[in-house]
Structure formats: C-alpha cells, structure tokens
Image 1: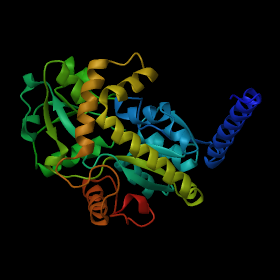
Image 2: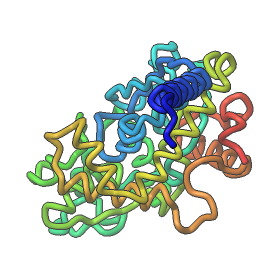
Image 3: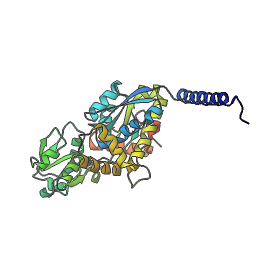
Image 4: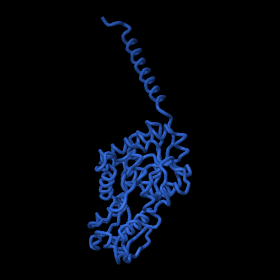
Length: 329
C-alpha cells in the first residue's frame, strides 16, 4: 500500500539531492585556486604555432588551475625580453639568442621551458637562383634583418664556411619572403618554418640550414626572476597546463587549428596548416629522447658555448640562475 506521505517523502528526497549537489559544486569551487591574471607575450604576431595557448584557454584548462590567461601578440623576441624583464608580462615565448642578450644586459630573466631544441634559422631562396650551398651565395644579394638574431647566425655561417667572396648584404625589415619572391634579393635569412615556408608554398624553396654549422636551443618560455621566486606554484601550474595543451594540440591538429582561427579568422589556412606540421616536427625532435620541456644540464651548457661561438654573447654564460630547475632534467 502506498503511504499517504509518499509525495512529501519524494519532495524531501529531491530537496536533499539538490542540496547535496549544491554542496558538492561548492566544495569543488572552493578547492580550485582563485583566478589570477597571467599574461604570456608571444615572440611575434599570433600564428598557428601558438594555437596550443588558445586551445588551452578555450577548453578552460588554465581556468581550472586558477589562471586567467591573456595571450599578448608579440613584436619580436627583443620586445618579449623587455616586457618580461620589467614585469609587464609574467611569461613570454622568446628566441634564446635574444634571451642571452638580455642576460648580458642584466635583464632578470629565467628560462623555464624549451620549445624548439634546434635553431630553425636558415638561408632560403627560390630554386631558380641555384643556391644549395654556402659557396653559391658568392656574387648574390642576401636580405638580412639586422634587428634579428638571425643576422649573427648568418654571419657565423659565412665565417664557418670560410667564404672570402663578395656577397651583397641588403638590410630588410621583414622576414624576406616578399623580397625573395619578387627577386628584389636572391636569398634571405629567417626561420625555416616561417618566411622560407611561404616561398616553398609559392613554387619551391632551397634551404641552407644553420644547423650545418652550429646549433643551440631556440624558442622557449621565459619569466622574471622575482616573479618566479614569489610564484613558484603558479609557474608550475602554468607550465603543467601549457604542456598538456601543447601535447593535445600536436595530437589533434584540426582542433588546434580551429582554436587558432577562432582568434585569427583572417589567417591564411594553407600556410598555417603547413606551418603547424613543420613546427610540430621541429618541436617533437624525433632524433632525440626528449623534445620539448626540460633538457640536460650538459645540453644547456653546450647551448651557452654555442651562443658565444656564434657571436650572440660575448662570453660563455653560466646556466646557474638563468635556467630554472623545471627546465633542467
């Protein structure tokens, strides 16, 4: 027989369930750290190689770790070094050459994670110019961005190739692809996954990589020394989510690209798709047991020596105080 109190009992049961669910949500909310604003400045304008940051934010992974992430478009690694050094930005992606220059100038920077293990700098040209080796540059016009650390890398390549012929250096303020494609210059120097790729997609490209002559760690994450000392847990949470998002992006290209195009809908899809593939290949570094993330102390010390040998620093810098524990294994 059904009790006369059944409706009342059912109502009490529902209220109890709702109250319990509310308490559970409240407990989960209280267990999460309070949101803290964190800005990460890019090494340059947003590209699909930065998609993992946008994807992690859109999925709420940073918020889950108490991070209100702001991704700031960059204007080159030199600017990133300055804004992190001054405390304007908490993190940045920057080229190691620019970071090393900052160290020598006394900028309080700490390298916390490595993205690209090898320098992607390269001399690139259209196939019609038949530049396949350093000696083919003799008598040619080469575009060089003197504000970029690729300029020193180019000069080191010429020096190590022992070229004593005439090469006309043409100062440029861009990546060089437009100048190469319009034949204003015969070749240019930049990263292999950016302007060289643009030339490749427009009929093919010849590349002479800097790694034929030297190598050092390239892009990575930096932060401010004082910020890291005062916010070790926050830095740990930021890096944890960042590398989770990076790995997910590499495994889910389409999803990562859509996260990027949601932020930059006007971007060239064919170019960004090809760049994603090349950046992923460079970052995953199939010839080593470790790609992105922490590297051995010996490898960091080799990078410091190479930076001096190339001419990016005046002396061999010590790793101590410049590379965090999280970046050394």
